[in-house]
Image 1 (cartoon, rainbow, N blue to C red):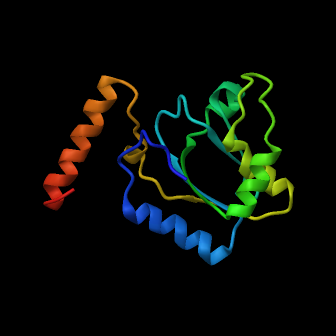
Image 2: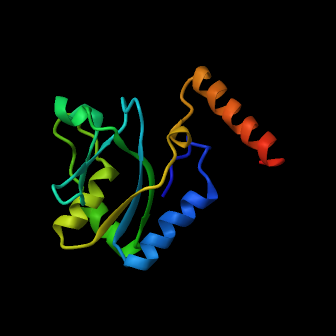
Length: 152
């Protein structure tokens, strides 16, 4: 599952996610990124053991959680049955009233399923296009990659 407004995704990133997902037979596998400015992104919350616990959206994050720089760029794999199970369990968020698909991995964990997380997304690949300035930044990176690789 990918977001449509982030065109800098690399094929090798998808391969990394899929390899881990297949190797571990996880219900869900999420790729994360560590960025300098995590504003606006869901934060990856890990337990003391370093394992994934949940994703907290910016609007719901505490001041301490907002300091976390590991974010959810929305690159993930799910086993279809587990995704359906998780989607059926989503309830509206108390703060926003929205239903967050990002709740599914936590719900799967609560149901005893395995959720894997891998820091596999280079920070510049996280850029999405919501403004003309972001479009210009993404275009510049895209053209730079095309020039250095001889192709896109």
